[in-house]
Length: 97
Image 1 (tube, helix red, strand yellow):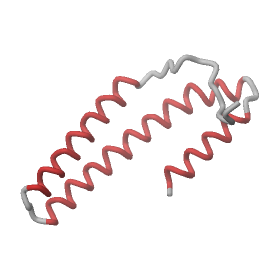
Image 2 (image 1 turned 135 degrees about the vertical axis):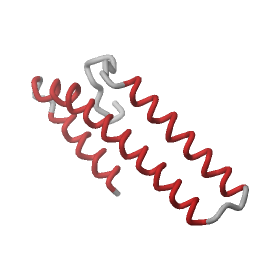
Image 3 (image 1 turned 90 degrees about the vertical axis):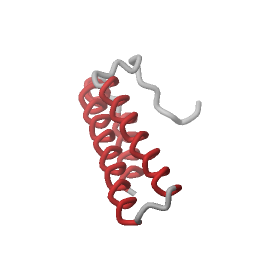
Image 4 (image 1 turned 60 degrees about the vertical axis):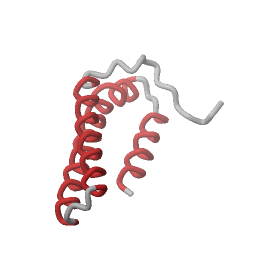
């Protein structure tokens, strides 16, 4: 066994399309930042765009967390699955670093 907890569902998340759209937007922002750097744009403009990328990623993470809590964690609590809660705590800790 790999030590990883396996969920008993098939990733039936409610916000998959919204997450994918947000990720696409973040990728677009990041590609724009790359072009700005390649073009020698002003550092302050690059930093502002990087802030937009960071915000897009953070908002995507919030949506994933909301979805995970609303589906996976509720299911884990109902089935007394403490491993899922431990994994969530570890994931949040790593994300916050």
